[in-house]
Length: 67
Image 1 (cartoon, one colour):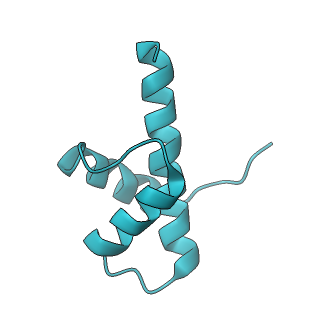
Image 2: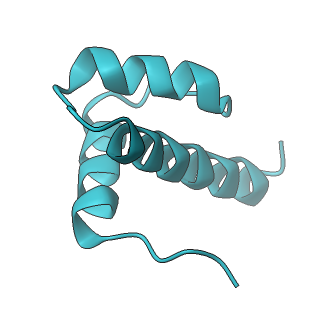
């Protein structure tokens, strides 16, 4: 059983992925740096949650495409 993500984290991650689909990849560390540049997130925990959810969404997309 995993941790629950807030609506704010999910909404923000989906919006960023929709606006900037080419900036994000399957690597969490890369996504974390990109989120830091795009948003003014004061909390490291929230930044990591957003980057982690983006990484999760990309992994699902890659698995669905068969890559």
